[in-house]
Length: 384
Image 1 (tube, helix red, strand yellow):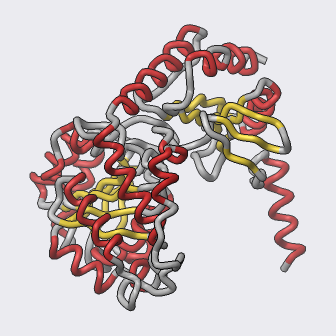
Image 2 (image 1 turned 180 degrees about the vertical axis):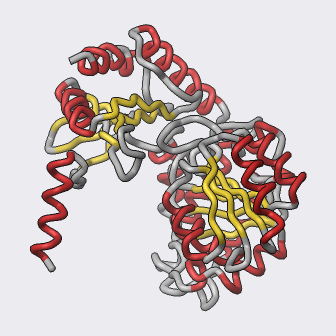
């Protein structure tokens, strides 16, 4: 077996798609240390800088009667007062009747989709949706159609042609796409949903805490929360914590508690993690200036990139610099490190073939001084 695996790994190395981990030491202020060298971190989803916020750190010192982990699933003895408080606050934050906490975003997506939909149902999914959405659909056994990225004409054509052949129908999309940084046309999606009797599920992982009047996400910003039946998101990105949620009706929540395998068969998150997530929700409400600074930082870098002739797609804190070739993406990543930036090369299969890129995550902690030279370095390398 190992010989065969070595051949496959060698092939990936030859193609420039072999992956490996780097041992890092996170630092405050948007920095990271690797092998004793300090870098400006362009690869973090800590968009609002909350992971090092003093109130978050204080929250992780919560005394749980001298106990760290729950050592139990939620359905046994692992559903604490803190878990219930987080779910209540999340429901209010997302303007939904109820919410359910999952251990990760991956577990939330596979658990929700595979529980609520199955053989005899149909699912329409944006072609660039996250792997966890795709895996949830595969586990469900439902009929699966992919529509071209953000192409509403293609979506409606697929829905009109296929909806009436199946029982339940789901349209699922990310709201801020994790690799492209662009946003889904939620108003058109919910309009299609209402015309054709579908359910809409949105993944707000990269929008939660940033967009909308209260930071709830893109559904709030676009005024479609009521038309989005299932709203999933995470506490592990802009909120600086850990875990995920799904905000739904009370009936759907109860059904998931009884059927969602990734929820039922997982030990619940430790109380200090849950408490940090609770505090993060409070900080989103109490410190709105953080998301305003983030938006300003992202706009600044996008303008700098455009000024040197680099396309800066989307309009969010995620800015992909697409270079197509995997080897070139690796070379540019290495050049960034030589200049004090930690910018990871994203290659297939994470992104489609011939769309390798440097994915830049702008954060609250970045300053214009930190980002100032980045555009020119990227331009010089791309022109080589």
